[in-house]
Image (cartoon, rainbow, N blue to C red; front, side, top):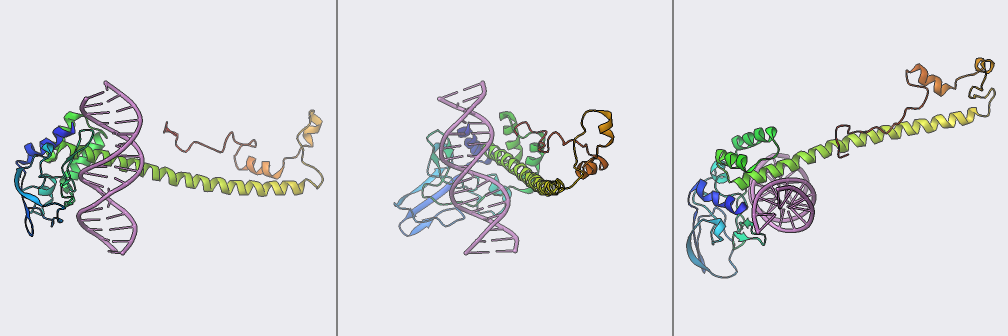
Length: 242
DNA sequence: ATGGTCAACTTGATAT
DNA sequence: ATATCAAGTTGACCAT
């Protein structure tokens, strides 16, 4: 459950403290971004960083550090407001609407996530928990990473398929053009004698049968004289969805 | 400035 | 009811 996921934040990274003081002109915040002026005066507050409790906090001690590992292990990127969605999920945005620094995973974190993704593109809750612990991330962050990773994989696959179809289309267009030209040639030949004709029944007639140039070409080229069953082959033979 | 990348988010569907 | 997913979106950050 995602509420619990966010609670992991506390468990994994220790207490999240943020001193908020915004009384008139003076401001005091540990956040690394200047906070926009609140619409209504904010009471000075010192609260524990328990996002799941929807308190007025979300920032973290230690965020001053520019280290990725520090940032990524603390609070996820722009998840800065703390609010409860109608489905009960936690979406932490800061109440004053301030944006946070974007999380960047470290190379080590990304590498491990990639490794796990190669093993399986989805995680069961246990795997998620374990991986989150290993990476010093919240399970929710791991979950989101896998969701985004799957989306990227699918997008890439779609792009590749799209390019393949584009080439197929080009090939078919070219063949169509060639066949039309051939048809024109055959039509013009139609006015000349002797006419090409299908072999009538009877052995004597077969002796005089001539193959038209088009069929001849195909025969010599190793292709069957009869038209292939279909030119519209399935470009994705291994994909059941297509 | 602008476009690309990506973590995080929202929403709706589905499974349990 | 809850968890999880795909699809689409947002916004910070970075390279150009």
